[in-house]
Length: 372
Image (cartoon, helix red, strand yellow):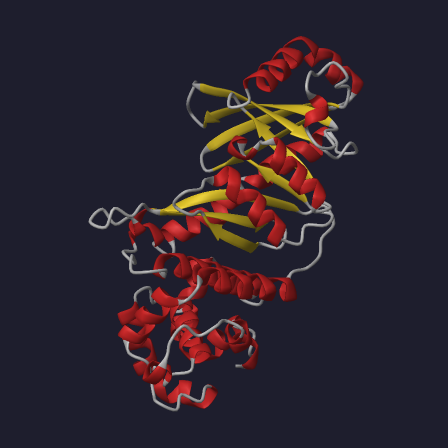
């Protein structure tokens, strides 16, 4: 178990005195094994430990037996979240495959159940980075009470290794300082433009309204379509690097071009067609219309493959962990569990099925944590 234990060994132990009788790295190892095996609460972690005690004794030292649910709860409440996040991100870099041009999507998610009305404590909001081709959470950062996504995103970006990647962010993160930070991290950006940047938005929208046909003839155009989940969707992407006319272009670090994606969505069997236009700015001049279209498509992987998984598979929004840093630290452990499962390639099936297999098979559980 040395590999998985090492993830936690560098985290400072916040406990003192007799409270340290259980080794911190072993308590946290049992916690991640339990989470992988569909145990969500601290009482379930204790139950997992008691039911698996004979087996756990063969892979961990456990000098004082299985920790109680109070021990799990106290530790998660007391651990310094930034130390947990730092250990997590350092571990991710040891398993991450370096892919040039990989799309790294940045987006935020609110953990609704962490809101505590009685203590006037707002729900925790976490900004995460998702590497699309690796299928990994690269890192996360919880937003403080007095902050927001606009200030948190640059802080997260500075913690990540992004050289050669393309960072995608929705309109909330389309800010000059964020674009500059991405370039400083030796990466490129594709940023959505909406009406929170009114001048930029209307200038780009007006340009494409008059130049669509000319752009299509020049070849800076791509069209894709797909049929899935009972609907048909078609997307047309137009791009141009001819932005000498764009007022304020010099304020956006390394701005190379602008793009528009027109999408049409229709439910199979329905006559109703939903139409929408999405505008972007981007920094890598060599990106084609197809590249931009794929980048925007892959951006939604953070919603479909991460946020949906946290809500539906890990029931994160239903969690009532509110004491101390519990919710924030548990978010990191959920991300760790997702990364471990996604990194296990020998077993076919959904993430949910893999968790059930972890619950049923100790051998498979060891394989998921990289110890078999």
